[in-house]
Amino acid sequence: MNASPAHRPLGRGLTFAMAAAAGIAAANIYYNQPLLGIIERDLPGQPAGLVPTATQLGYAAGLFLLVPLGDLHERKRLIVLQFLVLAAALVAAALAPNAWALIAASLLVGGAATVAQQIVPFAAHLADPARRGATVGTVMAGLLCGILLSRTLSGFVGTHAGWREMFWLGVPLALGTAAAMAWALPRSEPEADLGYGALLRSLVHLWGEFGALRLAAITQSLLFAGFTTFWTILALYLQSPQFRLGADVAGLFGVVGAAGILGAPLAGRIADKRGPKLVVLAGALLATASWAIFGLWAHLAALVIGVVLLDFAVQSALVSNQHIVYALRPEARARLNTVLMGLMFLGGAGGSAAATLAWEARGWSGVALLGGGVSLIAALLQLTGRQKH
Image (cartoon, rainbow, N blue to C red; front, side, top):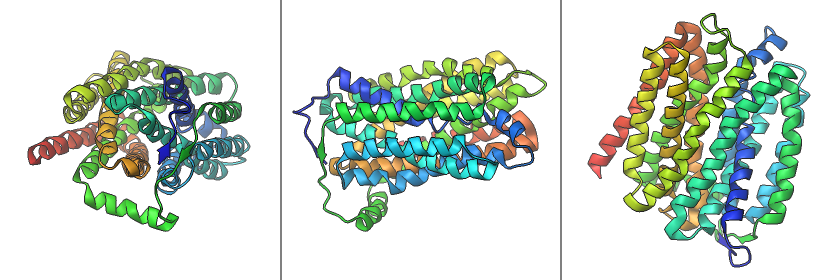
């Protein structure tokens, strides 16, 4: 993609606008998690617990099927169009008459919300190469802010108004962001001369060609599985007799976890100066430590401390893995991002589904074993990968 940054340089204002847009888009994937208990009460006897998994699967599908289009078509047009589709999907979720309809709408919401992953590689392309890590870190900080504060917002709205009202609130947010991106973003010209089918097939070639891509994608998939394990079950855990707390309190944990936002720009700066591999390993080890805190200390304070560590760890590793992947083949950044983020969200979907089973089978101890186990495997992969290189 040959963008035209000379017409609209990637200054601080545009960087923050792209960070905000990425956060608003990504927020839609997570509105349903604090609302899960409320949705289950409103739709009793129906598989409402599959809603988070469906959203993650929709996001993963959108990453593989939609994000590569950024190497084939003008990216500004794609970003605006996806925000419009996202608004329509949110209307469908708000109007869903039963859990199956909500699951179907959630698949669409997840797919359209991949517009966030059109924005991130666009920012990487427009950035000064010497500051690419810091720029991606800033945009990812906005994305993380959207992820975490979405839980706070949806928990509050769900408790005081209802779960449908949260989806209705997302509609004007998506439409407003579409208008802002239409005004702010520069136009781009794609470099790829492949057809859509060849473009998708090239994902397999990229996977086979770059060992660094495989290591980054598998590591991030495992870490994100642990991340979604925590956030999928948190509202149910807080509603248990041990705490007896509602969805609004579960949502407040998004504010607590927002301290992890600091990890994204910091990790980007360290990656620019010291290289990203050490940051990825440190993130995996820190994620494992957070799950040890969750599992060994059954107290509200453990959740507060652990969630800050977990969010910091996962986002630091993600920004550093993106730093590695974007440098492999600049003209294929959208497709490289597709592979990395697609595997990551497949891991997230698996984490959500496995977390539900672990919760039903062994309660919070089973959830902690699951989250700690996948994080530890990610750390071991990084250690063996570093030794091979």
